[in-house]
Length: 393
Ligand SMILES: *Cc1c(COP(=O)(O)O)cnc(C)c1O
Image (cartoon, rainbow, N blue to C red; front, side, top):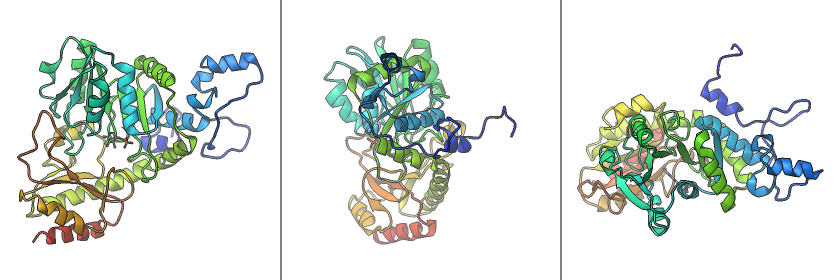
């Protein structure tokens, strides 16, 4: 490899976020640095650190970060192709902080109808009571332009969308936003920073639930917000003002998970595609949603804009009888029943058709299930699903 060639992403994931001090032996991984108070040798040194010295990487006080959290922030910044990144205790807290940093009373925000469900709680409990006007737009984005108002400050997208993975043309959305001075913020949890690059496609802000694939082991909660240089100061100021931080132990776990993100995601994706194809062949199934599947409505955009896929697959039963959900799910042994996704294990959950959409109705659809295809052997997973379908007869 010549000195000028950029290493592949898979290589960068292994090496990013490491300090490069030389002259003494050091561990590959950052230490877990627990601290609140930082001691300085002189007033000048304290003032240098407090004024954001050493590129904002000097230790100041626990709330601003530790070498462990800085290492994770730098790693995510490399992954997202961002200017800077800030960490939050959960993915949902990252969304809340991002809204708080960029929206003001009287402004209007357009939110995708396929948004991660609990963000609707943020709309109800935080944005609307604080005078921010919220409006949902169709997950494929076809109605966005007519919904834009003079007071529209932000478009909040999730690509692909939660539960049904609708694709939206982000570069086109970005052009629309740039012409009008509107911020474009994207929930990139599906892409995990690796297989979708919102900032490269024209977004200003990209955030993730690190809880999912980046941490990847179902044992830690965290969120991140990454921005371009122009939008960094507003986020940094609000984060500092509100005192948000994460524990170094958790940051260590997330970075540890992130080192193997690329090979894990590749295996999740190949197994999920095979399961999606197998589901398509089942007589009980009306449709399968997974953007890497050629029959998926978003497949062409997925091919153009995504760099891979993941383990999420949803499908709809042909039969409208709701009772089959419990019979199918309760029969499964390997697909655990529970919230979240992105860990090493397979999970199943119900796609609720009430209260999950404002613009598009899912009421005419048959019962729907979301699978997270884990890293178990594919044949075992298919045997498990086959038993679930057998229980319907
Ligand atoms: C899970 C999830 C979140 C929230 O992350 P938590 O860490 O669980 O709070 C946000 N967005 C999407 C798309 C998610 O799937």
